[in-house]
Image (tube, rainbow, N blue to C red; front, side):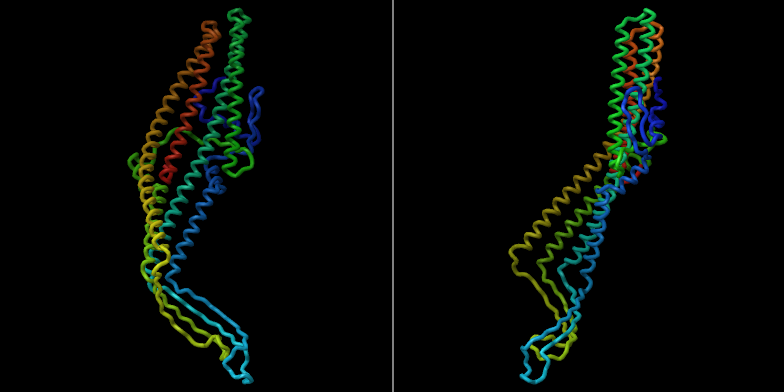
Length: 435
């Protein structure tokens, strides 16, 4: 039988419902599927097992820890120490009976009073790093989502092409029966029968190639979702185009302002600028205050701790450190300049990609509409040619030509539908939200 265009979107449903294997036509090899998953489950499982998504999540944790460290620079550092000393070096006269031991403990605190703006720059850099990490996390999750959608629709597309190939085999078998009938009736030559047999062989080869593609796609989908075997794709309720939630201009503006890649680039630029300010703070002196209280026994051992408290205020300023300050400032300036230019390029890329994908989406919608018309025309032409050939009015070549045209029209419609879905998924990955 010929597969009508109205059920192409649902192709493979009966096959996907079996958890173990796909039914085959004639001698075609079986395609094994351990299970079938819908798109929502595929995306969820892909995010759970993706190394890239996990790395992005852990980068956010690291950036949050960096922020705590930057905040901790404003808090006094505390330390506790204890010691015990035995020595015969003592200021006490020999034979005085003073024990040759000393012990003590201390609690000390120190805080920077002035760092030349380094602490503020460190906090700004940590905040920018956290913003970049979160933006990268969002971008990475959408990237993994797009990869999962790509694998899902690739498997679904392969399943549909299998159904198209099955329909081609069925049509070729029907054509061979008609050729045999005409040969027996004396209205066709043996050449017509050979052509029908050749068409059936070619159709079976196409089916085997489609099954091989489906098996490969199923194994790829299984790896993405963390399965140990091939996974099939459960067809969604509809693959037809649907309106976008925003206008084209709003989507382009969203890509420029709120795209995760743009936000990550801008946050990285801010972090590099903060690093430059932190490096330049080395040209100013540091002012630090330190206070401690000691508990100790009264001992005459030289070098032993003495009970009491002390407060120390000091400053430090390296007059020359082998051009290390200059090198750090130069490197920070260079990184900041690269980050600035990179941000501008990412913004341009986001604008270009958004416009390109929107245009591609419109072309894909038009392609689907034309492909549907092509399938309808090819379906009707094949029906007419089949009846004409059966009645002995047309030739085997006419029949084969119509059959080939119909198969190509079906393949074109399948390709157009999935091209639209992938283009839309790529656009959503770009702007960082569902559309």
